[in-house]
Each structure stands twice: as structure tokens, then as C-alpha cells.
Length: 489
Image (cartoon, rainbow, N blue to C red; front, side):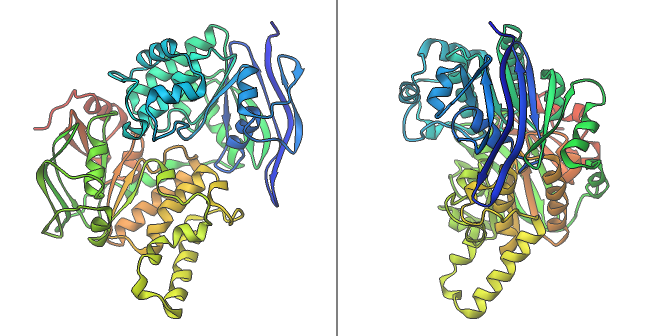
């Protein structure tokens, strides 16, 4: 077998006037893990989709095992030995696990073996996809890919929605498959994972490959320089996130419980505060945010907004009380085939009584403000689905920046976005708090807590086990609490 599994050169792709790729290149050898890196909008996901047949290139050449490939569909790519796991789940929500496997021609026995090895327990083939959490869906996508024994595995932000324990399982499994001869293209913004897993990193900027670096000490700084064309310091936000706010609670949560995993969570969230939540997968954080956003009822406990008891039967009830929600899966929050402006203006459209020339002008001004504030790429105005993942996420946040924020729920808001976009979002979160908003933020990236939050609570087995000031929330302390090694006093 040839040592080089894949060799792509001069790959270009345009969507009308928008050039997503202009000169992308990547070489992958047997037994190698290559990181594909770049800022959001650099063309990473487009490149992956071209390699796997989901998109046809405008120009360029792709060789598979030394022969020119004309991959016209994902099915053809799969037959050629290239199997992707895309950034968003590719399972059909209205079907159960078994039916999804049948549709993809996935063998059941190896799929179940990989699911177990990757750390998902008690999965039944009869489970409905719509009832499973996002992290589980990512593991199922990976297990489906591994079950067909591909020559080349392409992972597009595979770990972005995963907690620490599942990330470790994925990295261990992928490295073992590479050592056994598989080639892996690994798209990620997480330098710690890249340094643990990868052999080299290919860097894209503005649709071009600008360099390939071996993974060695100091690679992070050089990679950021190549991605952005300048040095970047995320640590500058730390000094703004060390002071705990005081005053009346905007949101008060007392002994809340909700099936199946939330058992006893209490906290007060104050106006002007960013409160972080840290938890491994499945500790009750999903249920907590569903209750607070009005998507689910709670079986015990009480909620109060500005001191007044509340009960939400619908997300609209929560919004009416000033509680707005940015979900972890941005696809759930976007009208994919509508424009950037239409997506941001959705909260205004709900206020039918306010329609009129003056209100429409104010709406346009607020939408323009949000686009400018978050530096949202509007080149693909026609459909928000054509934006990069980072720009899509900025649209979901920009919607509430335009409308105005009282209490903002953020569930993993920087999942799968690059360091440049994170640098824009952290100060924005701080600014919203300084303007009087109360922000509750769950994050799967522990280093975000001191960068964005005033303090954090740690949830383990459905209840709060620790509360930590942001300036004391180093990664080692958080990981101990995250794994239930610290009990609340």
C-alpha cells in the first residue's frame, strides 16, 4: 500500500462572489494525524466537505493513494475509504438509533463496540435520536465512522461539544487507530488536544494553505501567527473577570430538580455578574438550562426573577421575563435558509403590536449595531447556513445583543470557534454584564472560566459540589471539582 493516503493541491471553491477556498493543500500519510487549523471562515469545513464529496471544488486536484480522485458524493468518498464526522450531528432526529444505522449501512456489532469503548453507557438501539444529548450524538457519529474501518477519518470539531472525560476517550481511540495505520485529519481550535494527538498541523488563512508545522514545543504561538497574521493574547481578559458583583439577585434558583439527572441545584445570579457552570457530560447541566429557558418543567424547587416567583410553561414565558437563551447546538437557534439580518431580527418580529415605520427603523439600527459589534461576516447575506461556524454562533448571540439583554443563558457559547472569535466574545460577555445584564454560562473549556466569569459553580451528580471565585479557578482546581473530588462546605 502507498505510504501517502491523500494528497490535495490547489483546491479552490467559490459560492457566487464569495471565495471560500482559493489555494488549499494537504498531505496525509498512513499512520499520521494532521491537524487542519485556521480562524473561522478560513475554509476548513469547506475543504473537508470537498475532500469527502459533499461539495465539488471549483479547481484543484485530490489524489487518493496516488490516483486522482473524482469524489462526487459522500457515498463515493466512503467507498474510497474516506469517512467524515462533520461539525454538526448527521443523524435523523425523528428516527431511532437502529434506523439511523440502517440508513447509513453501518454494521451494528462494531458500532456498539465503539460506542462502549468511547465511553457512552446504556445506549439502546431503540433510543430516539431527538432524546439524546448533543455530546452523545457526537460519539454516535464517530462510532458510525469507525465501524466501517476507513482508511482516512476526517474529524471536524469532533470534541467541541464534549466534556473532558469523553474528550480523553476520543483522543485515545483516534491515536490508537492512527498507530494501527489509519490516516486522520483533525479539525480543532484546541491546542492542548492538537499537541496531544497530532503529528503536524496544516494552517489555512483566507482560503489558502499558509504553512505546515510539526507538533513540537512552541508550536501554538507560531500556529496563531500563521492563522491570524499576528500574535494574539487571550489572557488580557483575565484582569476584567476577577471581581464578584453584589446586589439583589436577578435570577434565584433554589433546590431545583428535573428528570433525569438534575437533583438539587441552588444559586443566585446577580445583575452585572457572569456566573460560570462547570460539569462533566450528563451531570444535569442540560436539564438545568432547559428548565431556566422554559423548555422543561422542574419536579422540585423554586425559581424567582427579581424576587418574584416564576414558573415557565413555554420558552416564550421565560423570554417575557427577560431570560434569553443561546443553545449549545447553534443549528437549533438559526433559520438556516434565512439571511443574517432576518435571523438577528427575529425577536423584533415577535412584537407585532410594535410594527410600524419608526419601529422598523429602530430595528434596522439595532441589527446594524449587533453586526458591527460582533464583526459578523455578511458576505453571504442570502443564507446564514453559508457562514462559518463562528459567524453563525455570533449571529445567535447578536440576536440578543440587538434586542437587549436582562438575563442571558449561554450554553457552551464558544464551542467550535477560533481564538480570534473567542477574543471578540469574551469582552462582549463582560460588557453585557457591566451594562447590567446577568449572564449564566456553561462551558466545556475550563480555561474560559477565569477569562469570562466572576465566579463559577461546579455540578456533579446533579447537584452543586463547589463554588469557586474566577481568580482562583485554575484548571487543576476545576478538574478536581469537575470529577467530584471536592465537596461543597
